[in-house]
Image (tube, rainbow, N blue to C red; front, side, top):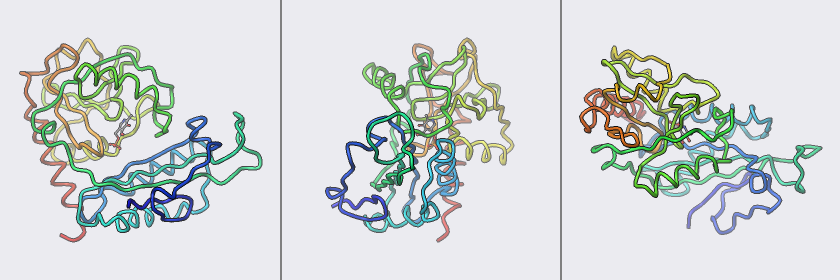
Length: 285
Ligand code: PLP
């Protein structure tokens, strides 16, 4: 039986009970994080836990055991016997349980803290062959920098894309490509990488940040500028990235073929460089 973490306890998942008055359930008043375990170590755990703490701070949530975060991530892996596997840890905080009312509970209540770990292997076919993605106007709020579980504006366009056979949906705001429903996007033009700057219109992806530093360390130029949709036909390559999939080449955007319709050479190079960097973070090497 899967062991989950709920409010200070590790317990079998079927014993994890959450109130229907939980504000995460009623309002989506809740933030979350996903980190990846590579059969012995987390990749950039400080990046993930740092972003989780920021999401809590930006939404005025306070958790007294916040210092135990890293320990809980490790323990979820251990208690589920995933030490030697590739896995993810999902972690969530809601503002807690209170009768339904838009105002924050006063006095404040304890947040609901929930986490689980599960086996996760990368989609090697997508990473090898590349995928087609769909572009649509960005229907989300203006705080996309907060990793909130209120994801209906991501879920609905994603489902529409999925139903048409696309692997991801990417959003367009004011004529510029922002990011995917659960990924960041990079373009390549004349051997330089282009990606949306870090601001309220995107989630600052941990994979995005690591790709930027790996690229710069290998003399690949990175321009943190958004790409206008009418420039897409002039792009040589594109890829999406996230914690669960690393780098996935994009070979078509809606009906626009990218480059020659195959994963680009810089995309391939970055897949290798990122993987080498991840492996170099293994403390047991
Ligand atoms: N953008 C959004 C909206 C996401 O949900 C995600 C990940 O789930 C990302 C970007 C990529 O972030 P990361 O690389 O930290 O997984």
